[in-house]
Amino acid sequence: MIAIDTAPAGDVSPGLLGFLVVAALGLALYLLVKSMRKQISKIEVPSEAELRERHKNAG
Image (cartoon, rainbow, N blue to C red; front, side, top):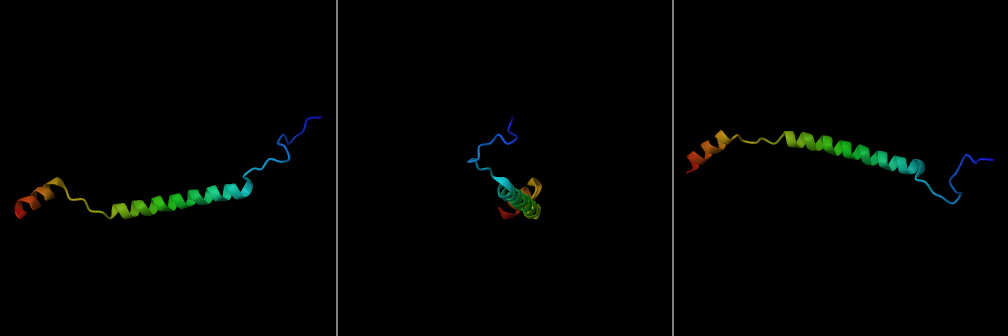
């Protein structure tokens, strides 16, 4: 007779808890990237023309 479960009785698998931990890490990563993109979009980078104008006025 062929056994349906081929894993030995002593083996341990990650199971539901392992899946939930990986899913939680994935969700946390998604939220962190979303927040990071929001923060980065708030940064104002001056153009080269503005930098040259500031340099002329300062010196």
